[in-house]
Length: 219
Image (cartoon, rainbow, N blue to C red):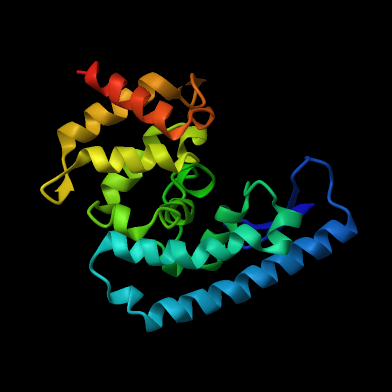
């Protein structure tokens, strides 16, 4: 399994997930995956343009629409073969579809390319939450929520939905409630460098009791 990554100087390098030198078959498969991604992202760009994506003033709706279009990656056969853990796919999207980012070009730092601040990754995650549950947020609040959570908790939609429910006041996110709610969640789940509890092991009732009780004792 290999991935083709284009460098800043326009050269292409091949990276294998296991770190071993790529075989000829790996390289052929990586090139095929890249071609498929380029073709698909051209279709995505065309579809978004027809929907008014580039004129959309509401950032949350704009990036939610992009995230919905990116859901094809989840079941894409070549992605599963070449990049089963999504380690490099988000980085490749910056190379082939920079027009779909906030600046219309590549990111400023490497953290936005390969890290959890990758724009395509955040859009992809956003669209996995029903619109009716996130429409009252704004883009900056959404990213703040996700960047504050451990990777394990991000996968627990119940926690994310509970956070959103708690921070909305009069139809918009409340900064003070956001700070307090995220602090309570971190008490339960910990941080990326020091995870504590796995929230997915709790039943719905157990999780809500735990979240509410912790929030009550959080200043």
